[in-house]
Amino acid sequence: MQAKQGATAYRVAWQSIIVLFTLLLLTGCGVNNLPTYDEQVKSAWAQVENQYQRRADLIPNLVKTVKGFAKQEQETLTAVVEARAKATSIQVDESILDDPQKLRQFQQVQGQLSGALSRLMAVSERYPELKSNKNFLALQSQLEGTENRIAVARRDFIQAVERYNTEIRTFPGRIWHSLLYSEMELRENFEATAADAEQAPQVEF
Image (tube, rainbow, N blue to C red; front, side, top):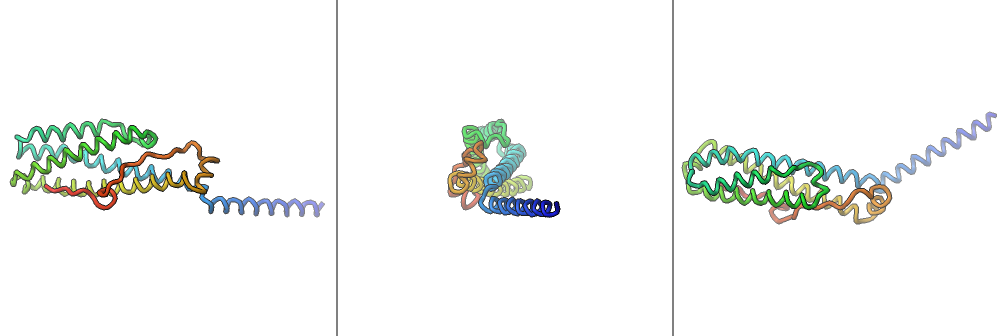
């Protein structure tokens, strides 16, 4: 009886060792990489959302301040307001990552808003009093900081998506994708530009 119990305990011990060894092997061969990289993509996207929203929140005060000094620039001001309305009308959440068309649309309207802001910045050069206004200077500083944060957030998102997509396409991630994570698909990315990759766009008033 004791011999049988000893053999059973011995067998259980070996089974435990084999299971532990298998888990260690799986951990070291990238089985968890895909879900990890997926979460990094989502986290990076949340930062992109936050920074674009921060910019959108600054625009009403910016338009109001410029209007106080340059009422005749109504066309430019209207263009900024309309571009902001389009940019904020898109329902943005984590689900956009699985909808390439919606992601491209989001990128397009944000680009249109950037263009409208650039035209507004150029207009402000004609008004020295506006450029020296304390409120305007504070908004300028906040907008510059936000543009820098947008550039960094976009770069981080682009890199996170590239890492995730590469894992799906290459060994051993390709194997784990087919065996365990087949529901995960390649993700659409922002179009990387030199400005996105290297430095933030300049905001000059």
